[in-house]
Image 1 (cartoon, rainbow, N blue to C red):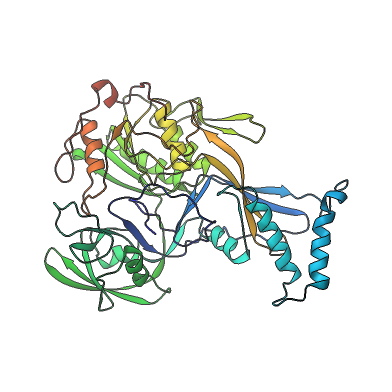
Image 2 (image 1 turned 30 degrees about the horizontal axis):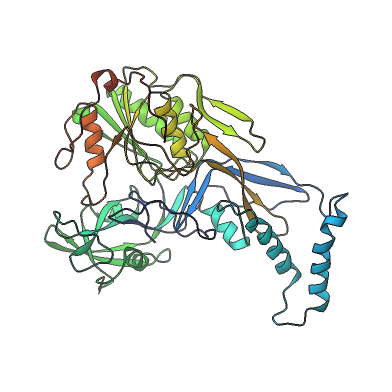
Amino acid sequence: MPLFDSTILVPEPAEPAEPTQPVEPASETSAVAEAAVPSGARRRRASGPSRFSLILVALVAGSALFLGGYSLGAHVATSPGTPAGEEARFAPFWDVYTAIGNEYAGSPRPSQDELVKAAIKGMMDSLNDQWSYYQGPADFENSLLNVGGQALGIGVQIALQPIDPTSSLKCQTIGNGCELAVDKPIAGSPAAAAGIRPGDVIVAVDGVGLAGLSIDAASAKIKGAKGTTVTLSLDRAGSKIELSIVRQSYTLPQVNTRTLAGGKVAYIEVTGVNGGASAQFDAALKDALAAGERSVIIDLRGNPGGYVNDAVKIASEFIGSGAIVYQQDASSAQTEIAAEPNGRAISPSIGVVVLVDKGTASAAEILAGALQARGRAKLIGQATYGKGVVQEWLPLTNDFGGIHLTVARWLTPNRVWIQGKGLQPDLAVSSDGARAGSDPVLDAALVALGYAADSGPAPSASPLPSSLRNGSPAPSASPS
């Protein structure tokens, strides 16, 4: 199953039935990393009627878990058993439950726990909501563990691309004019430490060629258990290289930075909006401003989201006051979540652009939508995923797993609901079909800010008006 242009490093949580997928990219990418383990976020078992819940904007698609924000807190369950006054309504349920337990003669005979889990699943399925579903104990545990912070693997993003950079071939498998190339190693990962570089072509894994494999099948060969070794045969600009890499746990950086345009532009990539992302972003922004960088490119491509609080804090670096996002509950009541004070870059003299694509989801969309709707930044790239609903993750007692339940929707500061539509970029630029290691969207952002492209040929993009290069507020179109 193809992933997005900047792939998520949290593969293989359990998925709900038939989730909708975004439009697939022409050049597929994948990440070779395994179970992500959030720091100190293991599931807490409920005691008595008390339990905790995860409030989040979540998107589960294929092998990637998209989060729009969540928080831990107390959740008080109703008293167990049939609610008072509901005996007649629940009588058919108890009749069926009792009849199966006492009289069912088929094989295999379900346990009482299996019957209850099936009933819970049936209730969730009856909602006909792809975001609301039941997970058994193991799957729910994995979902919680996959929320972020840590990953296991070698930590490299790979892309399936034509061997001929001028070719318009749409690659589905390796071979017949298509190759598997490294898009980038993940900072701090075993792959980065081993010296893997963007643009390296992976020819074989453990001595076995990859011809005929899909990107997912090739990725599966590179994955493996912690402490085991994988040997990659690489073609680096015509030189043959073999690297043996031990699969290990490593911390996923939420924020990566570099300086562009000769020290004038701060590039800040936010790979996830999980816990600590806002603190890392604040430190990066502080350093950039202290170094005299007066333009900021925020890269949210492939960002699956995370904590709403972190998204609000990052947006507040550029927006001094007023709405960042609205949350609308089941009664249609809307609650404003406002900007926090004392942002480092609220001055309009600091220009801001945001890079987005179809993998930008949930809390990342909250951040991008706030900056766009408030006129603080222009979006460059592709339309975002379009995930505008909020889930509550509820662990169930007796080690029964848990449910994901849609409890609200979120709206941009101009009260637009982006569900199914996404945020529309102010400047549309696609990276589909781009060579591994090149970045036409980043080049377009630099050109839009008035600087030269940083890699490859300059894209055909007109600079933003000078009044917008320094971040002066301007109205932006609402998503259609």
